[in-house]
Structure formats: C-alpha cells, structure tokens
Length: 354
Image 1 (tube, rainbow, N blue to C red):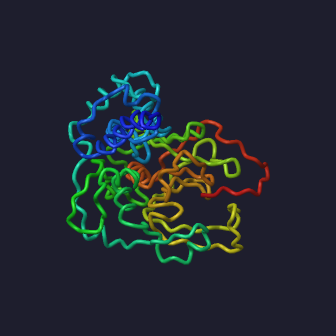
Image 2: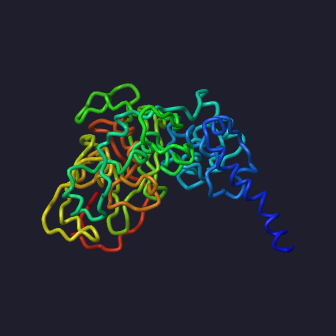
Image 3: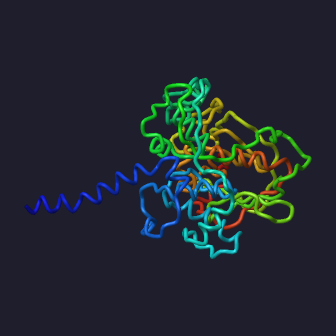
C-alpha cells in the first residue's frame, strides 16, 4: 500500500513534466506570460516563457547566446544588459517589469513556421568531424553534421530545443513545416572585407570585458547597438589588453594553424590549413585585429560560449559573429577591459593564438 501511495504522489509530477513538454510548441511559446512560480528556483528544464524571453532579447540586440529555454548565465547577462538600458534594476533576474519591457520591443510572434527546403536537406554535410586539428586538415569542408544542426544554428536555438519544438519531425522531407524562432537574420550584403566608409547603424567602438566575458558594440553617440556573450582568452593564452583596431572582416574563413601557437594536444611541427565551414575552429566569420594572431570569430560549439575559455581570441556564436561582421569596418577600435584569467606562465615565447 505504501508503494501505491508513493506512486500516486508522483503522478502529478509526471503529468506536470508531460504538460511542460507539450507546451514547447508555437502556440504556447507565443502565448507565454510571466509567471514567478514557473521560474522559481531557476528551473533546469526549458520553459516556454524563457524561450520567449530569450527570443525577444535576441531580436532586441541583446544576445543570450544559444536559445535553449533555460535560465543560464548567458541569459542572465543579456537580460541584465537589457535592464540597464531600459531603466530597470540590472539584476539579470526575469521579473514582471522586465517581461513587460521585453514584450514592448515587438508585436510579431516569437515563434513562426518555416518550410524545410531542398537546399536545407542537400547540405553538403560533414557527418564525422574529428577532434584533432591535424585530422581536420584532411577534410575538404567543415560543414554542419546534419540538417538539425544547420537549422538550429540558422534560428539561433539549440538542437535539443529545435527537436522539443518539433517532436514528430525527422527533418528529412522538403516542404515539411517546422516551428522555429523568429529571429533577425544578418544582412551579409553589408559586409565588405576592407570597407572604410561608415554606413548607418555601424558600430564605431567595441568593448570586450575579460572578466564578464561579454562584447558590446557602440555607435558614434555611445549608444549600445548589440550585446554578445563571449569566450575571451584563458590562463595559458590570455586575451590582449588596451585598445586594438579592426583590420579586415572575412566570411567563411579557412584556419591556418602555426606550431608556435603551441595548442595543447596539437603535435604538428609544420603549419597546416583547415578548410572553411561552420564547424571550422573559427566558424563562419573572422574579424582580424591589429595584433598578430588575434581576432573575433565564430565557433563550432555555440552552447559553450562564455562557459569555456578560448585560445586568446574573442569567440562568439556563429550567428553573433556574422551579426557583428555587418556592424564593423576597418579602423573600428576594440577596447579590452578587466583582468581576465591570469596567465599561468610568464614565458615570453608563449604565443597569442585563436
């Protein structure tokens, strides 16, 4: 009898979990409202209300990194930046006032339908991507592993959330309609490799915070244009200090490894080049800085942004790196603030790497 009673007590919890999973669809996310009880204790599982809040932040220019419907550090940082810019206490905690302010940033649905195309399914994909850089150099391309990864990145969401929003979808048929985040796609026509003339909406200054692991883009008036979470240097490969300048912007870059970078686990004695692609070590964009070996770039691991350190450069999600590439030009200043992780060695031969 006691076991029956225990099982009976678990039924509401199991039903609640099933209801939660059912709520991650177009209608429930678009209709989500603020609920303090729903967010109590920073729940680990995805919530429709958090999916909605993250998409609203992303569209307003405050990137939460990978949209996953969870209350993580990147969401808190983006929300705190939004709150500070909108006259709210910068707590990083979602409350009714912050929700109302976010909801006022746009009236369009946050989740919309997308028809899977033949091009989406065609790839080309790179199903098996080795871990070691030397092995990557033998591949002709570093494409997406599958269409789920491709579509998730296109709409700034985690592959797990994409699957949760489309539980019956196998992503194998052109013409299938799926639910996706209604995010803004970067206007890549704005990107010119050596553009000097400013355009409306351009950033004139970037600020990289090595302690908070963030990057901010400002216009000529000092207004914040975009906020991004970032991975910034490490103890062994610290990010630079002071002020640098952007020298050029490259889309779909290849990646050349120099042995003097001395990455842990890379034993090559001669330089080698890794082909372009979203799973290239520097992702889909490279923004070259005026110190040799340093740049701002994308990543093949968007879920790890600001959760792991980089090899000295400033690492963003691929979509954030592409967005930033549309905002900057040659000569834009990049200021580094904060101390960041302190180097484990003072050996002057330790090189700056990507």
